[in-house]
Image (cartoon, rainbow, N blue to C red; front, top):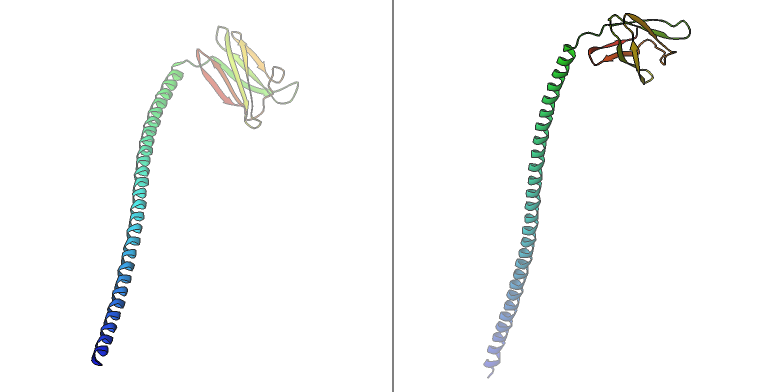
Length: 187
């Protein structure tokens, strides 16, 4: 009988060791399952982030395509406007060059009654002319327009008494619908 308790002790130890190994293996399997679950959650989160990034990139590409198309359309419109503008400028230049020269001469003299200069405008034609006189002082940024009736074969003085005191550098222009404009700078 003394042999029986000695045999049961190693069995108990083996059973205890087996239970201990089984518990450790169970813990390892649970740890691996938990790690796999965490990896699966992280993988799902990465997939969602990647999906969002892909969607944002696709939206950005669509937006860039739309902007490129708008830029191309704007460039085409600008080119068309440039062509129209160059066409209009050439028409304007043709129209101006088609008009005869205005039969008027302009000279300047010193004012006898005040400061500044007086414009002497001479109509050398045999008819009455109505012209628009446009003057501008680029230094002071002043500008005015005057309507003048010029008699045939006559001279008209225009200075500070008529509404403008000319000084050197003023821009002077005479306009009439039937004739090319006269533009000059006061000496």
